[in-house]
Amino acid sequence: MKIGWLVIAAGLMLGADKKLLPGQAGNDDIELSGSVIVDRDEIHQALGADLGAGYVLVRMKAVPKTEKPLRVGPDDFTLISRKDGEKSEALSPTQIAGRGALVVKSTGRSEGGRSFGGFGGGLGSSPGTAGISVPSDVKVVTNDKNDQSPLLAALKEKAMPDRETQEPMQGLLYFPIGGKVKPKDLSLIYKGPAGKLVMDFK
Image (cartoon, rainbow, N blue to C red; front, side):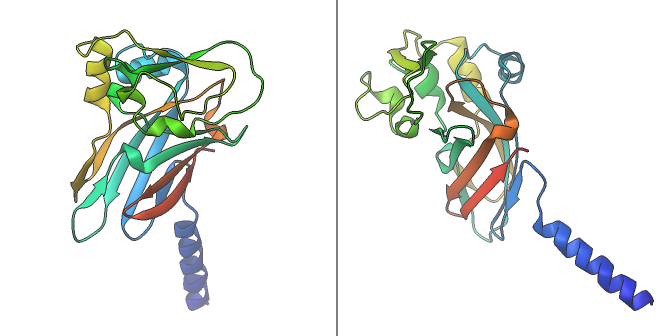
């Protein structure tokens, strides 16, 4: 009888290991844990500065489990809204608040089309919008903030680093998102040297 209970308990433990909690994902090479911040006041509190509307933050912790250093950085992450399929790649601090960066602003109207897929490549390096697909209720304008702005300093201080490491690392990821979303509506995709993982927040 005791052996039978031990077998059942072991099976339950194995089942629990396979079903990760919300905000968690992992494999043999990396463990990820994150929490999403969608409320503007909570974003202000987490960042220590007003980021403005149209952004979602993810507080991310990555724990490499490889024998050699593993590169981990914001470019490995994409946020997806299950409400409308909108995709958003993580932005760097200079893409949000650096000189010549582009700013996401809602126009208050929507006519379909919800992709931010082009935002991950050089958004802050060019004042143009060529090659960038944005929702019709959003416009992109040139930022007039300078490179010494308090917002840029806060973004850099709190951002998740981009480096090779064997040590746990953590920081904030910044995503442009149009419209109102709830944490349960969002999924985070990790695609990097450690493979591909999906993290849900519900």
